[in-house]
Length: 221
Image 1: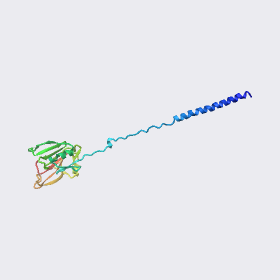
Image 2: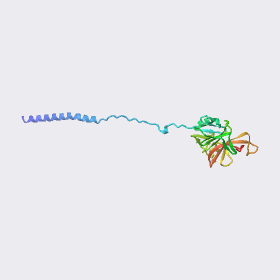
Image 3: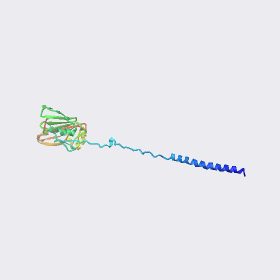
Image 4: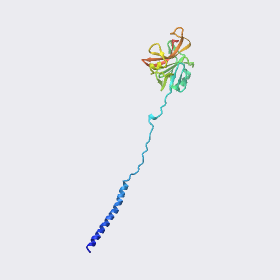
């Protein structure tokens, strides 16, 4: 009996130690589990900025040329007159150079002034009247403003486009005549006994329009 008691006491001590060990290990496992929990982080904020392609494009108004006068597609009237120089400068975004008197076929013409932008010339009377105002166009646009007729013909247009707009054959293959009309009180120098005519002369190189200006068959100037 005396030999069994130490063994029983030893067994009880071992069991107690095992229980205590299990109790101590449990918090360590909990701590490990807690440390493995994900930590919430701030959500990044994405800022979208406008690109140049997304910005609105402002279209430039066109200048529509005719025999009687011009106008912008915004509805501004532009007579061929020196008194309307400010309106022209505003419409085209710049002021022209001015030349007076101008050179005519038979000498200086002190009664006329030439107003010149790059690609556009106006010849206007100094008395402020709008006749015999003349234009000469050699560029598709001035300051970003397209220059064209009411039918959409301008420098860079094709022969076929001009013909489709109503132009007729001119003196030779390098010329078309657009918006031709009779001018009462005049006599044609090329059609004996008939009333004179005027038109917008469309000059071509090959099949491409390179310039436009008024033309007629009753004046030699």
